[in-house]
Length: 62
Image (cartoon, rainbow, N blue to C red):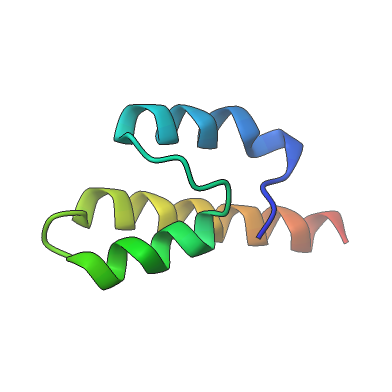
């Protein structure tokens, strides 16, 4: 999944604060989920919400 321009700054801030560098939010979500949901629960919740907002914005733009 490519992050739309309207969401890039927010995603970059998340990556910096969480210490990750994956440019694909869906791939990062799957990576974190496979590692440990307990350790990365906050990040998984944030990424799930973020991906949902991107999908909603894409539907509204279409």
